[in-house]
Amino acid sequence: MDIRAISKATAEHYIWGNRCDGWHLVKSPQLSVIQERMPAGTSEVRHFHHHAQQFFYVLSGKAVMEVDGRPIVVTAGEGIWIPPGTSHQMRNDSGDEVHFLVISHPPSHGDRENT
Image (cartoon, rainbow, N blue to C red; front, top):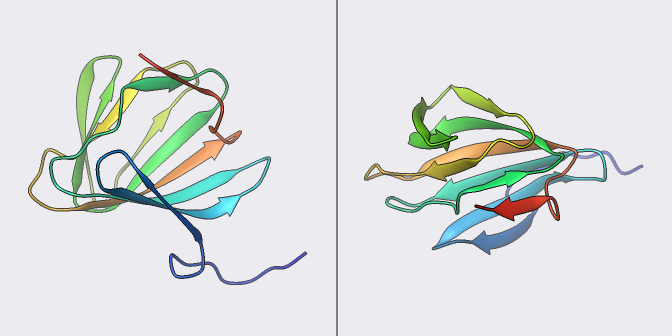
């Protein structure tokens, strides 16, 4: 097993949505930890996961997480848990970038359905 420090500089990077970034900090069959960056005015597509539960933790900025049609403001130092089957959409309605972690168990890739 290769145990080492992980950062955005060493993690697998990908681009999603409209100019948003993601870094796979942990990518295993049991757990996914992704650091993401959303520029001002961007959003994710509303969706849910059949099996994965997720925890979103805001590192900096202010995001709006719409959960089953209800907007919840999440600011730096706060997080929100999304149970499996719950429709959600992360938005950045602010004028600043939002940086956050997404922790999924089991990993959410291939378990997503857009609504």
